Image (cartoon, rainbow, N blue to C red; front, side, top):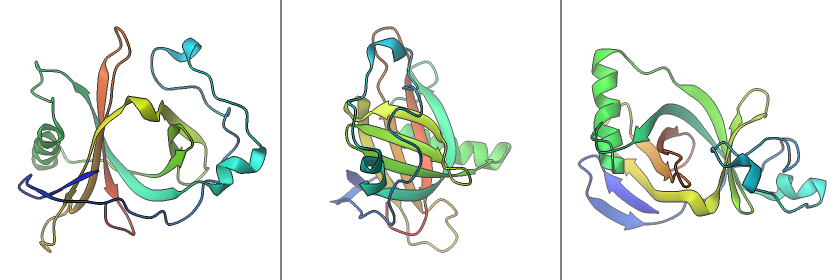
Amino acid sequence: MANQNSNGSVISENTAAGNGHCSAGGPDSSEYSGDERESDTIEKRPNNALSETPLYLLEHLATFTVNKESSIVFPADGMRRLLQLEKTSGIWSQKMQLCLDYQWVLIMDYETGNIIERFPASLIQEPTAFTSTEPMQIYNNILVFIVSGVKSSRSEMHIFQVMGLIA
């Protein structure tokens, strides 16, 4: 994962350790969020397999369609758009949990533990962390990743504020 400071410069390569474990349902509790649901399957595993995977607390800030027309192609473009939205209309965040489960990335509701979105890990592109030590910077620990579109499906950029550990 590339880490970038608030001006977008790469500062280091690192991955953060999980602060918990997944505990929501089994691996079949939700369908893949993309347009190719019928072609994606999950290998059956024991019920406790999900409970042994890392769990991260975060706030979902935004999801953008990735395309040249909207000028959102790279993670830095998403950060610029997020900051523009904050200044104009504000950001409504939602507390979530991210679970790295086997070959899947699960986005789960914080309160219920229900799986909201599920992506094959192989479709995750450009996972990037934007961090800042400036006390006035509200978005100081950001995780951005792109879920690549399959065939005619559109790609999406997901932006989260990571809580409790450095992105």
